[in-house]
Amino acid sequence: PGWLPHAMSAGLKAPPVDLSGAVFAGQTFIGNARRNLGATQILAPMPGDVTTVMFALYDGHVNMSAVRHCLEDMAYVIRQYRKDGMDIKDSLTRGVVECDARFALAARQSGDFRLGSAGCSLCIVMLHDGCLYTANVGSTRAVMCSGNKSERLTADHTVLADADEKKRVVKSGVEVDAEGNIRANDSPARPEYLSPVTRSIGDVLLKDLGASTNRPSVSKHDLNVDDRFLVIASRGVWAVMSDDDVVTEVQRVCFEWPGKVNEEACKAFCAEIGDVVREKGSPHSVTMILIIFTDVARLGMAARVKREEDEHKRRSRIEMIRGSMGELTPSRQWTVQDYGYMMGGGGMGGMGGMGGMG
Image (cartoon, rainbow, N blue to C red):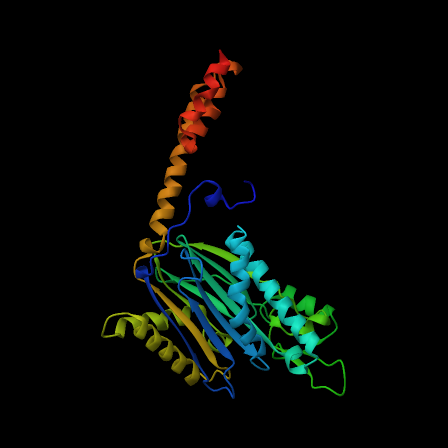
C-alpha cells in the first residue's frame, strides 16, 4: 500500500537492533547553575519496537514541568505514530508537536502560571536500521565524530544563532535582550515570561504571543564505518565549548581511559566533560548522552547496505534489459515491467502475461 514506508511496503522489515555494536550512557550535573533542570531518557529498545532505540535529552527552563511531561509522554506519542505505519522522520515531527500540544492543553486547563511559563529544549535521536534520526527544538545539540571531524546533526533555535528565528520573534512584538533571551509580560500582576530559545516544548504563554513554536528540526544520518561517537548535550556544554572542542575532549578521555570502554566508562567520560564545562565557567547545568560506536555493522548498517546493493543490482539489470530491447516492437515491451516484477519478489506469477500476449 502506498501509505506504508518503503521498507515495509517492499517486505524489507528492519531487523531487531543489536546493541552489542555500541555502548552508551547519560548523565546530568548541576555545574555552576543554581538548579539542574535536565534529564535523559534511553529506551533500548523502545517498548513494543525491538528495531529501534530512542535516546532523548531534555533541558528545562523556569522549572521541571515541561521536562517531566516529556519523560512521561514523548516516547508514547511517537510510538503511536510508528504503530500506524508512519516513517520515523514524520513520527518524530508529529510526536514533538503533539507532545507539546498536550502539555499546552494541560497548562491552559489548570490556569497554573508555573505550567504556562515552563519550557524545555530537547534532542531525540532514534537508532533504526543502521540510521540515526534526529529531532530537536531549542539549544540542545547532537554532534557526531566521524573520522576525526565533528558533524552537527541538529539546528540551534535561538535568536543569536539564527537570523530567521530572530526575525520571527521580533515580529511578534516581544523583547529580546542582549543575551538572546525572549522576554514578555502580559500582566503587571504576574512575573515576566523568559525563554532562552525560540522553539521548545512548553513556553505556552510565549507561544500565545507568537514568540515561540514547537516545530522541530529533523535530520537523518546513515551510519558508516568512519563514525566514532555521538555527543548529545544541553546548552551548558555549548555555551563554552564548540563542536570541535567537545569532539577533541571526548577523544582525549577515551584515549586516556585505562580499562574497557563500557557503560561505566561512558558515564565517566560524561563526568569529565562536565568538569571541563564547569571549569570553563558555564553558568548552566550540564546534561549529556554519549554513544560510542564499537561496531556500526551490528547496528543495522551491514543489513541496510546489503539491501541497498541488492536494489541497485536489480535496477541495473532492468536498465540493461531496457537498453537491449530498444529495437523491439512496442508489443514486446511488457517483458521489461514483468521482469522487474519478478525480481521484486513476484516470482513466476509474473509469467501470467505470456499467455495473454499470444
